[in-house]
Length: 151
Image 1 (cartoon, rainbow, N blue to C red):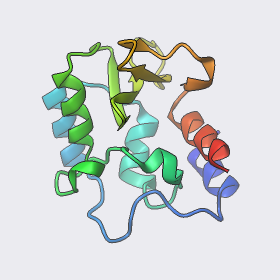
Image 2: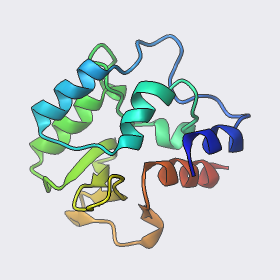
Image 3: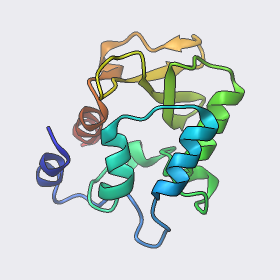
Image 4: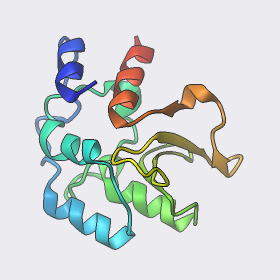
């Protein structure tokens, strides 16, 4: 599945990024990658820099999702997600992009593929959520399944 497939499949749904906010940008994203020594898959970078105004995420996924623009409010800022995760000293092989109630949606960077699986790091168990319903092949799969589950 591609972003174009997502756009077509969910064409009646509202785009992820609010039109009245400054867009994620490459400079801020690169600064975050360097500052937090993290890796994001190409699909996430492409979503941030190209598709955020075209692809829907849905209310559930949008809540706590981080966008790469330091001018954004903390509740939508990717740096806040990365900073909170780092302060808790959770595993470095995970790169978070969303947080909710102490749990973090992360890319599992141990994959040798260019696209990383998405997992939830559960703060209660201090580990990756074991339920297979909370693991996705990649970022686009996560968007698709999240949109399906929301309705």
